[in-house]
Length: 361
Image (cartoon, rainbow, N blue to C red; front, side):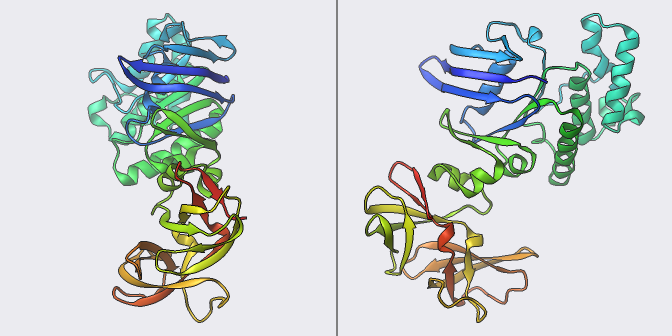
């Protein structure tokens, strides 16, 4: 395993800038996820680390070795692609061994590595099969096994689960987490799926418009988003946003569009217009058991999603603003009901016109 360090990395295609002055350190043995929407630059950044895209400016070091000028084959990393890229005429064993044979590794050593990787991935019984005889999940495991036998300094994964169905994605995601625990290797994983990021990552790098928005553990980016973009991108369903008036800085009343007011302590630099953000689990349907002191306002229920352990109520406030509240799995709320929704003031975020976050304290 090896540390990967990026220093002021930039990349353009003609006049279009796709990576802008990014600096990042991936610690040895760490699993870091690059997360962002399509076009955010995450796959390009991964391909630059792999050597499949050139770096216009900046420095890349892998395991302490300056690597941005090295060809891909000399960087000692292994990449697993979205497309499995298996040779259809070869068996699983031959697919896994092919790269080692090309560089002249001894046959006994090749057999040892292939057998060890197959045992690790629980596919010893598949070694004689051809790719056409495998399921999608099994093919992806072969692609991962082909990377493992190289014994690289680091693994790079480019959306490896996107071709799998929902149930298989869940199972393979667990297998990848277990693989990282066993190998303790440095891994970088690219995805636009926040569930994959939250469940796999030691740290998440959130990318947007070719730059890093935030770096943190999964719960740091969920509970303490650095920007409005991160707050809206992380979480399912997304964070509620409302345009509000902040009357003064410090201990301040906040006025909602429907006239409802509450008071929080927020370190905003000055009063004015802000976007208030709060996650659905911090907005509760008021019942007789709720604390009457908690601020609440009236809303009309439009749609109800009963998800088993919880119920989501898609509501409209009196001024027409949409809002999602959460209730228990046994909720009796129905579309058309008028309810009161209570807000947990400690979970409120305020975002200024530039998207910067100010969290209630």
